[in-house]
Amino acid sequence: MAEHNDLGKWGEEYAMNYLRDHGYIILEHDWRYGKSKSDIDIICKTEDQTMVVFVEVKTRSHHEIANPEDAVNRRKIYHLGRAADNYVKFNHVTELLRFDIITIVGCKGGKVEINHMIDAFNPLLL
Image 1 (cartoon, rainbow, N blue to C red):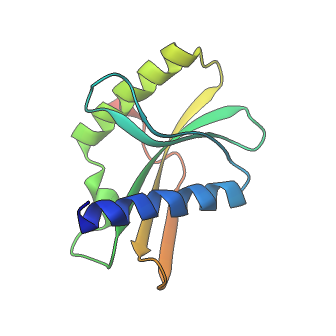
Image 2 (cartoon, rainbow, N blue to C red; image 1 turned 45 degrees about the vertical axis):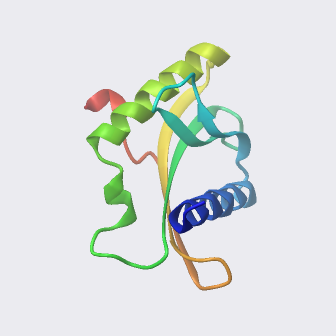
């Protein structure tokens, strides 16, 4: 597996631990519907279980020219919205929905910066 894939998987695990530590209930990880390009890194519920949160995780080993969240562009938001729509229909979700971004800068065994952007975007507003 390529080094960036290892970093991405580590980042998603780190993000799931962060979310659990903050009271979120993890429902799915790397959820994909069919063979589509649309996948969701983490699907969880808030601690009070009133909201389903779709989380996109962006991990970088160090600060680059662009911020990690800048990789969540219009095309990515469109695909996340489609995947979330399929998840909602497939699982008969009735709770409120939210889209978050978690950025992680660092690496395993080193200093790690995490930023949780709550309600970061709405795919319906594209």
